[in-house]
Length: 271
Length: 271
Image (cartoon, rainbow over all chains, first blue to last red; front, side, top):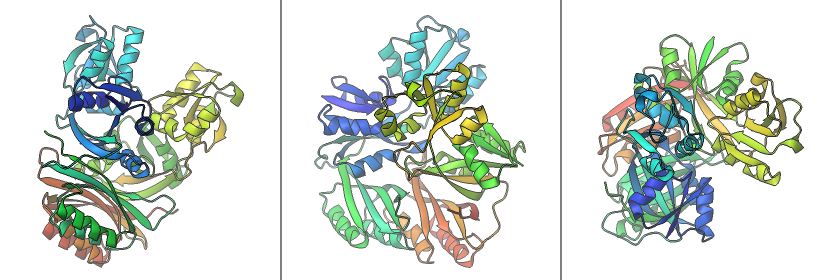
């Protein structure tokens, strides 16, 4: 099975694919998020995996937008603990490291570690890309911050693992495919709906969810481009779209909204 | 007056500072968002300006988190139309450009333009940083994508302006300072509140807003790290915290939430 993801080989998304599907699948790297959707739609990949939320940096709402624009459905959820590693060319010792390359967010998340050791942080466009570049240069006074998977992919050495300041660093991914998942005993459903931009419209819409005793696990608003008086909301709720109470809630929701679209139902990620 | 922002000289945030405050203020570049808050808290800068939302890429919720953690208040709003420019060393002609450096998001937003002209997109960590690097190398077959301001700052040439595929590309910024803004006739207020993670709690909380005929312009949920049964919500509403109906709504909101914090009231950005 082939699973497309955004980024270079060794990206955290690739780590998430291995966590969820095991090592028998083939991860397919693509430069942009929309290329992940293209790869699945065209049959180059069987499934795709995209990040939608990080506990420190926030939502990657671009991927909810793509689910809304395209015909693919969300059919799985993966939650990955982000463990940043200090990675070097084989044989380099920690006392030789002067400079550290990585994506600015990863550098920011490891700032305390770098400052304590007097290492200079240098921004690069990507975490796994920094490891690839470090290998190409063969530098012996330089490290990169990326996933353990990146060290493995490029045959590099991990000098330290878990160097981020906050251990509560999780990224949530959705698996996308041509169809969503059949019901299990513990599911979630992602939905997008549009309401008029007047006081109370969101409150009325959420009444359909609350009134049917359904738990909301995420909500995010987005202005509708070029339509300043309409708003789009992305919500995740607990339950499967085939559950009776979800079905009832979505019917009611349809009455108070301009439009409702189900982005897919999928089993809740196991901790 | 000194206004801190995140990024290199010539960043879109710097363009937003000039749009809002004019050319007499001194923009103060800082590497990370939290450094912007530090600069204002320590008195190195009088105010700060941070992005909170982009119409294509979504929220930069990290900056709402910082407003929640720190004592600074939101006191202004700026909405900037993002106009990507193709920037080269002086004298370089468009037919000579083979490679284009920029941040992956900017490259993605200009993909149609680059592909039509057979230009190779190469990821860099920053838009303005690409222009700085391009100047340093003096390359004559290479361009960078960044703001018009970046070309100005580094003495470079703009070959094309507005090369993004979607013209509806806006970034919304908040100005932060020690106090929020006094009331005008058209204000917004940013609020953070925490509710228990049970069905209906958000619906009840939003009832205080809707019941007082107040318009909601943004909502975003965030799981509370280490507290799986509590959720934090960031909302923006129309009106000033000193308005009678906002005051009443916030008092009611306080009764149905674990906590409510006002992040600041500020005049709505003029289009």
